[in-house]
Length: 266
Ligand code: NAI
Ligand code: 15L
Image 1 (tube, helix red, strand yellow):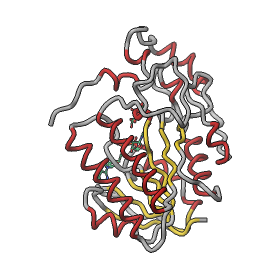
Image 2 (cartoon, rainbow, N blue to C red):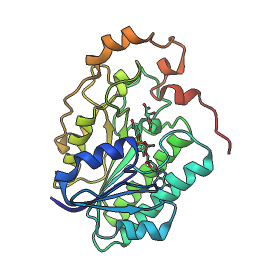
Image 3 (spheres, helix red, strand yellow):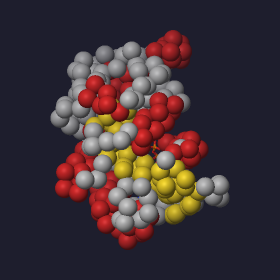
Image 4 (cartoon, rainbow, N blue to C red):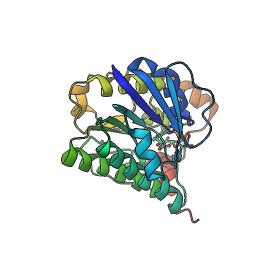
């Protein structure tokens, strides 16, 4: 069991879910976001912190032996926003981890948008080079690179999870391939913090989808067995919406509509 597990981005969709469901992994959860976090539950410490504030992030990370790093800009945005939250923020997190009295193990919430420009007829594994589909995707590639460097140079272990689409259920036809159920994400987080040796793997964060494009055989040693499958929602999706036209980005690229998005100017 961990002593203190830090969850960043705890006001977000995944952060709220993790806050509610990860208490069994640690004696204390340190819950953080840049906004109000409500009242602390039993076993929680609350820390308001902007990831762009280097000294505040050092204080945030000190004493934590595990970090689920969900905080940051989670969709495409102007460069200034991406840079502050996802580049400076990740640098601050790793510098804080390097300097801390306890070296934390980290789960970094990367994204399928790090490889979004692969076409949907391509099959990827952990060795597939990045192919980001926007500034947001580039920032996730940066985060994976930081994880790799801090592992090789300082021994900090990180699971970089290229999360597909983690929502209660798939929202469109592309997500039949990219969906990860919340239950499967919790199972993955458990394995990341329980496995004796983690290293610095790239993991595709998706359920056991019949329509998957991703191969996680390289991380079989984690013992993660996703149990859900987006196929269970196909009939309901078909009844609710038309699939995208075959030339639309949503049907061509793994990153879907992000590939058709332009650069967001400030
Ligand atoms: P979200 O946008 O709901 O939550 C992100 C949280 O980060 C927010 O509460 C926000 O206040 C916080 N945040 C943003 N900038 C910050 C800063 N400078 N300092 C401190 N906190 C800051 O995103 P969601 O869906 O919960 O995703 C969590 C993480 O997982 C994100 O890093 C996202 O990129 C990644 N991800 C999520 C996917 C999904 O399907 N939900 C898919 C792929 C990646
Ligand atoms: C992401 O990276 C986003 O954070 C999330 O909101 C979804 O858009 C997801 O990718 C996706 O591609 O479905």
